[in-house]
Image (cartoon, rainbow, N blue to C red):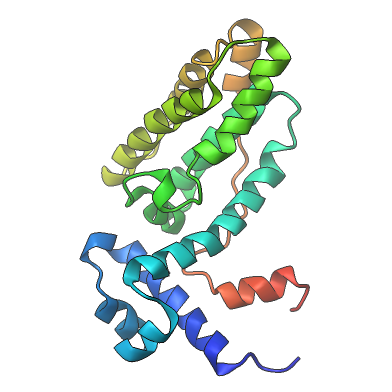
Length: 221
């Protein structure tokens, strides 16, 4: 296979540099100069690809979101019930907190899921809440309920990450139970979903070469 063009390789270095810096420090403290220096390019070269550092972050977020959403979908669609899917979605991010330090830093150094995941957790939760409302004839406002769950889950996980603590399974279950209770789910459905155990996720470590990721997805080795 022919080598990738120089422009593609340079952008891949910039994307990897953004990821590496995000793992080390807060985005507010990172400058264009930091990104360029980490990628080994000039500031002028950086501006050949991005209008600003936030534009570079948006590009990386979009690329990594595709990876994370594909991973999440492969997990949650092993379940047929909405409450079980939502349970695994929440515990997926608990697993990241507990077992994937690079991804934990990527997500929980931010101020919200939407800074690192396209559409935030709401984009994944809202259609599930809607489906659950229709199938069980509950009168939930899907967007409001999804936002309520996201705004409750993220600060808790961020606090544990900042304190360098793992979140015990029992507490993860309590978070799931509270989230599902906000949808009107109760009884055996609630207990079963809350007690589901999420397997460790197969995410590659960060920083991730987007170029190598795309090659892998295209079937190259």
